[in-house]
Length: 163
Image 1 (tube, rainbow, N blue to C red):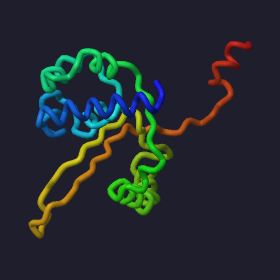
Image 2 (image 1 turned 30 degrees about the horizontal axis):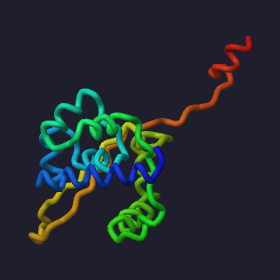
Image 3 (image 1 turned 90 degrees about the vertical axis):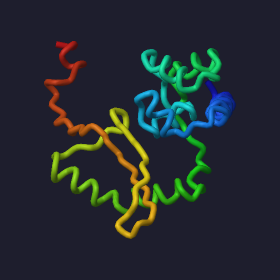
C-alpha cells in the first residue's frame, strides 16, 4: 500500500466515524481498545485483529466490509513529515524532548539499562479536572520494559550454526 491509498482509506474511515456520531472514547469502550488505538486503526497506523473486527463492526455498523478487510492487513506505519507543524503534535514532541532525558534516567534507575517498547505499548488520552478546576490533558504511555542485552558471541545464532 502506498501513502496515497493509505490517505484515501483513512479519509473514508474518518467519514464512517463522523457519520456514526461517536467519539473515539465511545468506540474504545465498545471495542475494549484504548482511545488512541482506535484512532490509530482509523488512521491506518495499526492493524485490526481478527478477534476485534466484530466488535468494531458492531461499534461502526456503517463500516463497509472492504474497509474492514483492508484494516486487517498490516499497515504502512508512517507519518507526514509536515505533521510536526501541527501545534498539538509540536507540543507533544516538545514535551518528550524536554522531559525525555529525565524520563530516561528514571527508567534506568528503576529498571536498569534498557528502553520502553513502542511496539508492546499502550497509549491513551484522558480528560481530567485539575486542582484549579480547569480541564487538563493526561497522556499515558504504557510500554513494556526492554533491557539491553550483553552481546556474548556464544549466544549468536549464526555462530552456533557455524560450529
